[in-house]
Length: 216
Length: 216
Image (cartoon, rainbow over all chains, first blue to last red; front, side, top):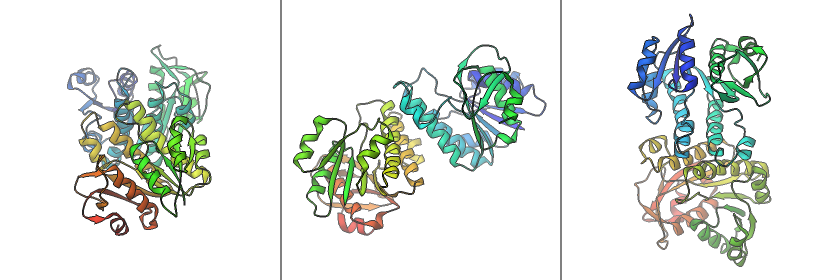
């Protein structure tokens, strides 16, 4: 299975590309914003496509040609304004879904935020609410498509080493999760078609990642 | 027909309330953000409800109780950041649609921007693109509901006196239109159920507003 990773240069993305390239049945193609980000991915043997999420659907669809799945783990990040939140986290995500449809890629794994419900928008601190709203509308759009989607809602991301143990369910108690473990959760999700049409929260917990994803 | 005007204190809203109150078959209820905005509307005999669009769906639904139609003409305005663009122009609009559903109000007239297509997001100057995206997603959401919607896409808004002559069609050549004429277009839309399920661009032109709306 060839997987296009949108946002490969992010911290989850880098772990994910590495895991995929170590995996016998998976192969990574990375979508990155700048040519100078390509070297480390090429070293891992990953194919690269230089496309900015602010480009149009056709540019993203070209990157998606010939892949079997797309993982969206891009984000505008904490150092940009709400203008990029709407153009990247919402519109960039929806353009990637349209690109998937255009390129005939059915499988789509979205890395969302821990809680993107309407209630979460309403109760978020005002500085965070635009981000929650953007992720909410991206998730809602994805659920309205015919794509074979899974929406992953990780807890508070840490840079700790992965421990390979998680709790995953439609609602779990808020907790941290290492970005490295989120990458492992994505791999387990790609390997299990029973996750299609589902969304789940995932945090550090007590069960092995494979068991926990397989039990969803 | 009792009409809730969301964004009544805006420039289009003020003209609209005045026209509705002058109209035999229509009656205005205004949704405003602050109690101190109420006096001028009460003088016109309009009922008032003080609700901020950043409040929850239930608060907006309470304002919508007992009305027959909702006109959404609110906007975060040019003096706020993209955070308010997503929370008001997109999320505030969608919450108003949900409030309409909750309050059993079927008729919903959205005042959109001239061009909210995907192509318009892509070609907009970067300072304007977040606004176009917010209006795009609000319009798309509305079209996915079961509400009796009409989406009005006015040209560049001016504060000139209305002249009562417009061109309206799914696509028209870009031009200005006085806010006062947009208010008249909204009244003509509310009076013509043949506009349900339609969206149209409207600019200053050559035909009377009623004839032009009736010809859609």
